[in-house]
Image (cartoon, rainbow, N blue to C red; front, side):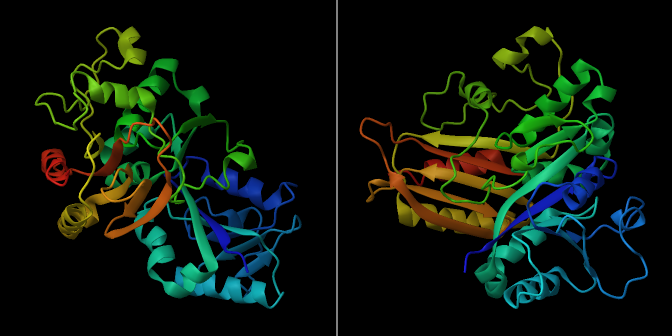
Length: 356
């Protein structure tokens, strides 16, 4: 039986999660989706669509979707849904989990890797983060949870761009790219995003290509000689003169945000020693795991002609053999780390020492 794909939907209050979920639960999109509600806030969907006094926490919608509030813990809810699906009591093809506006999606994501029974039935597809263009700056400044949600994202949807100026939106997208260069950003209006843009993004698929905004990599490269050396003064975090080509037009528009959620990229054309790399990553994850939000890489490993794909969330790390390096393709290892105040120099020097 094939695995049930799961999407984790996260974002601060007012970012449009509820609007998006209402559409999923009521629109005629032809997909049978189970939505697991974990949000008991002002904007609870119940008020609008659901009957409040029901004893059953699973409600069938008229478009064939199911809405289910978490009464126990997530794991039990997922088990119940899978069991009812097996018995034919419920019909659904995928699951969307809405986390509360303040939640850290990390532990939710980890459930799908750590829990064997859940991992045998479900496949985590991606973490989507909704951002409200009008209030994002203040939320990102004040709330670490909001910054963490950006760091975890596989895809970022920016809502309410019509309520902010073009410059504000541009500054926001720039800020988000620094926090998480691997999540594509898309402006959406009031949760009006095509269902196809929400599902099957394969953010956790080990073989998915490593999406990093090419401008971000270019910006990371000035003066680098591609050995992954960390040239002093090139750790170009906001506040320094950002010389992305696309930002030259901003004419000295210096970004002052120095967010604790940051990303950096390591690249090298030399091969990694598998034993050394494993030891180093093991040690790093041991120490910094709770602050490592997402990390991913395509690696050139000594002793194999195939790419090695690896990724992780917090302390959980997995790797897999990918396709063979193509003829004439430069065997470049590329890794991106997204986390909270991670010591870039320790990571860079440590990785450098794992090269053959």
